[in-house]
View (spheres, one colour):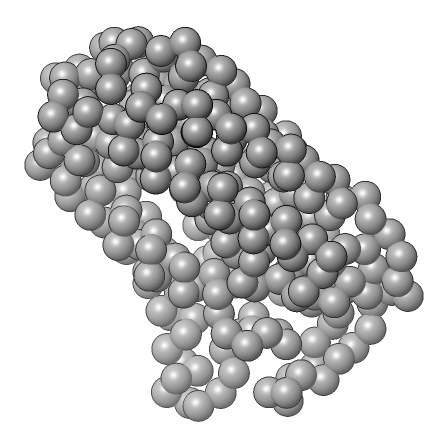
Length: 291
């Protein structure tokens, strides 16, 4: 695997830093509790008031705590195990490693640009940077000319590609449906709270939706890049959708009002993503592949 020593060093740093960040988010205390805050846009926002996310809204703090839990329970173990077996030459593990790095990149990009400033800001920046370059190097390590031969000829590309296209369309319509009314009416979009812009929606509409759409189309057409991108999108999708499902549960427990569409859509996509991952992994015909 090309540049594996660099990828391994970056991944180990990600494990250490994300472990510290997640534990701080889950275990930190202090503060005077929730309070109401009038934002510059005129809306009244309920602020968390305690812990590392004390200056964030109750909604975003609930998402952060759920994300930290999933990072500890799923993200870190998956990153560590896939890194170990990728070093042994496992092609499946290389796919898992790349997709998991995508999860860490998305997660800590959102922490860097959305969460209110806190003492772990520089840790979030480091995690975002390490994840970005490890992800790029991992993507570059695959031999795109031969990657198609690592999958069974009868792999259900229409099912897997169609799932990604559906995710792209569903998430795109969901967020556009949330944003459009505020543009037409000139009002503040739901969920903006006291933040300056819709960071998650921007990341999804600008990166995730086009990537999933392109990946799905390329896979249906059986193009080499479709096999690589689909592996990344599906694996990253599982970790991210699991985190989102946990966020939805935690927000509900915290009394945060949510769209019924969001509440139903993301857990359903999460379940189907697991099915797609099982199909994808069973479709790999080789366990070792030279870069």
